[in-house]
Image (cartoon, rainbow, N blue to C red; front, side, top):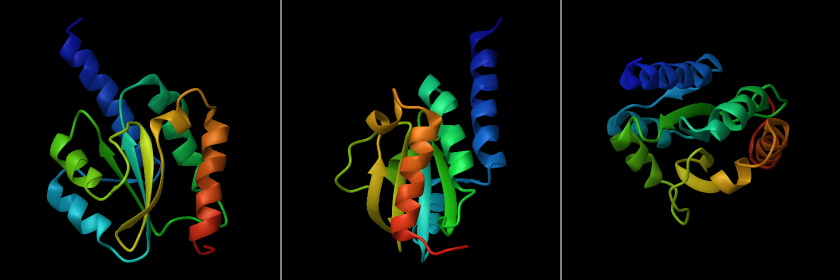
Amino acid sequence: MDFNLFMNDIVDAARKDITEAGFEELRTEEDVDTALNREGTTLVMINSTCGCAGGVARPAAANAIHFDKRPDHLVTVFAGQDREATEKARTYFEGYPPSSPSFAFLKDGKIVTMLERHDIEGHSAMEVMTKLQDIFNQHCEEV
């Protein structure tokens, strides 16, 4: 089996997981600037191909948004795949080191908080979902 074809399958599945959950994929720097400068609340999932992304972060993201309160905008960048878009997104996460997978929560284009890799790795999808919903409770309006 060709390793690159295998990796493409993994990347495609990871992209599909999060976009089917309702997250808008940002693949260029321009996409990032447009999406992260919108008014309101935005959850950014920094996606990756690691096990904790597929086994914890993406399932947590997909389920957390089925809640009384949720962000106005759901977007994702893919670390290691869409490098320019990911680096551009990270310029909005002032005070936080690069981390993937992770979640950034912004309000009116400004970082409010993040769930970093250490908040995800070693935790269950349910625990991460609860952490996300706690953020939504604090900062989002009822839907």
